[in-house]
Amino acid sequence: MIEATLCFPLRDDDSEGAATDGDTLREVLLIEKRRGLGEGWYNGPGGKCEPGEGPRKCAIRETREEVGLEVRDLEKAGELRFLLDGEDHTFCHVYRTRSFGGEPTSSDEAHPEWVPVDEVPYDQMWEDDRLWLPGVLEGRSVTAELRFEGGEPLDEAAFVDSDLEWGVSFDGARGQ
Ligand SMILES: COc1nc(N)nc2c1ncn2[C@H]1C[C@H](O)[C@@H](COP(=O)(O)OP(=O)(O)OP(=O)(O)O)O1
Image (cartoon, rainbow, N blue to C red; front, side, top):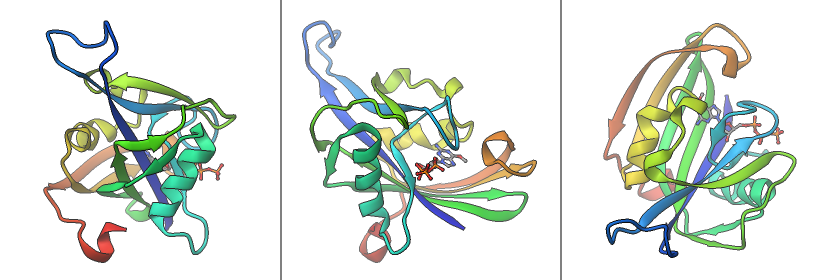
């Protein structure tokens, strides 16, 4: 099974014109994936773990490689198990953070974009994302089993059903 990560940097945009009705505009950094699995869709920065690499280090490395952002203090927000035709395919660790340095820049893998959390383009993302990403962006934690059918590659298979559990704890070893 592939082990992979996703990282969702969050910020408050207080700049003039950004906030409406005295509210702060909350934004999430998404990427438009330029190659590989999910090419052309929006997602969080992330990717596959290298041999012997822990998921937290992977999320930090992939975010740096894809958009040049140095993320810190990652909070574990989810564990997603993707199944394809009844078989384990990918186990994905999901993180969020409000702590990072640098400015996001485009790479040959990804084009970054700050997006208001209530304008996330779910119609241009993996179909399962609309089930778990809104809660993750609200600060909730989730484990999910997400089932696809139709054979490889995963991004051409059909999303068929899911089981989600909210409010799980990622304390201890599971928080890695
Ligand atoms: C099945 O649903 C998925 N939803 C979401 N939101 N993200 C997913 C899904 N399945 C896989 N992913 C993510 C997990 C990883 O972040 C990437 C995998 O992308 P890729 O295969 O391109 O991994 P890289 O390590 O970046 O690629 P290279 O081998 O080219 O370095 O997709």
